[in-house]
Length: 275
Image 1 (spheres, helix red, strand yellow):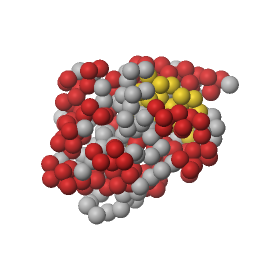
Image 2: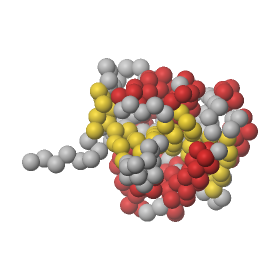
Image 3: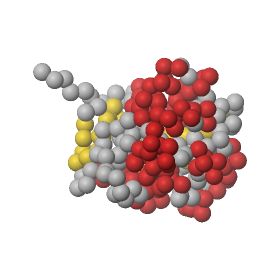
Image 4: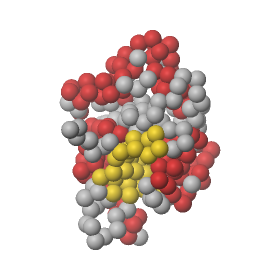
C-alpha cells in the first residue's frame, strides 16, 4: 500500500494543476491567519521547509510550487509565461482553499510575484515580507543567465557557475548546496528561460508607491542581486515599509539565516496585527 506524503495535495485549475502544502499547528480554538511562502527563481516549495515549523505554531502556513516548478504542471515549450499568469494562479489557489487574505512572504522573485498580487488584488494581501527581492533585475544579474548555456547544459550548470552570487557558501552546509543544485536542475530549461525573460522585462520602481500594505524588506547588506542601494530605495518609496539589512550577508538569507528571518517576520506581523 502506497503511503501518500503530506505534501501530496493538489488544486486543479482550468489550465494547470498546482501542488501545495498547508501546515497548521496553531491553537484550534483561535482563528489563525495564513502566511503564504512563495519560492524564488527556478526553485520549489521545499526550499521553505526550515521556515514551516518556525511559523506553523501560530499561523497556517501555505506554500506551493509555482507554474512549471516542482510538482505543479509544466507548460510546454513556447507557451506564454507571464506575471499575470502567476498572479492568477496564486489568487485561484486562495479561492480554491477558501482563504480570503494572506501575509505573503516571498524569496527573491517570489517577492516580485507578491508585489504583483498586492497591486492587482490588494484585498487578498494583508502584508508583504520581501526576502532578497529586487524591484528589477540589474544588468549584471541578467548577464549571469545565458539561455543557450541553460538550454544546452541544464540548470545545474548555471547553479554552480553563479553559486557565489546567489548565496554565502561559507554560511551553509555543503550538503545543502548540493541538494539545492539538484533541486534547481529539476526545473526544465525552457521554464527557467521563460521565467527569467519575464523577470528581466519587469520593473516595479514606478509602482512602489502604490503598495499600501505593510512591508518588511530583508536583505544582506552585501547582496549583488538585491543590493543595499535598491533595498533602501524600495523602503523609501513604499508608504508602509521597513528595512532590515543583515550585516555581512549577501544573497540567500532565507536559507543561510532562516531562524533570524522568521524572528524578524514574526515581530513584524505581531506589530501590524496588534496596531
